[in-house]
Length: 334
Image (cartoon, rainbow, N blue to C red):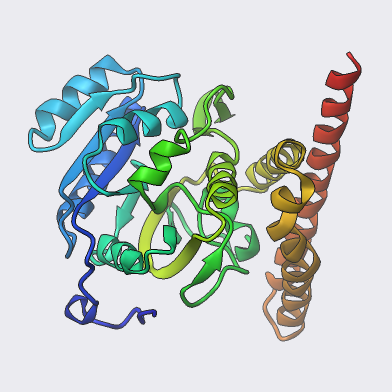
């Protein structure tokens, strides 16, 4: 099963899923325009969800504005810990659909997005689906930035399947999961302080590292006969600011990812926590380096810069991973 980007919405198989709830966390007063664009994208879906739930994260002013601006949308306050994890769990608690679709407030979905996610649940052995996230650049797309590291923006990256296929890691900004299983597993794991990355005193990214990966592993361990799928034609565009499209941001996110992966491996075991990463590090990244050098030899002056950026990101991730391991060892010794 799979669809080409060129297909018309009418050719997409109608899903048998009875009801879908869409959950959109929102937290920043300054991102009202992005939230509005996100909700309008949901209104244009070929498969209309039974409800859209906006969860405002501890921001009374934004909560009031959203309720006034979108009277037909269910708008609630985050009832859990501050951060996107608590907000998502608050939305899941009140969702009435048998499928919960999750996205972020800085995304804009293609019209067939929900339909293509929901169609995958015709297979009763599918527990969840994650879709494609394309970077929506606020400024010019940096030619030196390697697609292998688009995950630092929460976007799909080189190495993911190009057709419908099983995966381990869902991406919370574009994912759907069966509500019963999501609630039974306890939702996203809380208790981890939300992170933030700032630029010149302004927060340009925030959230919880690997909360979606941890959820996917936990659900896979609980229901090993059920699978997660990657549907590359269920597409949303994810905003990328000019401040994020920098080498400094790539290095910081890579370090953070490595540190978080060390924690995940310690909690889940190295086999579960690092199974996807081994292929990424041993195959995808070396191919990316070689590709950049080859493209440079063929006249693409940015090719070697992409190769160098891959090496820099990998080194930063490795240092972060080592730091995370040493931190865990130190805590145990204490």
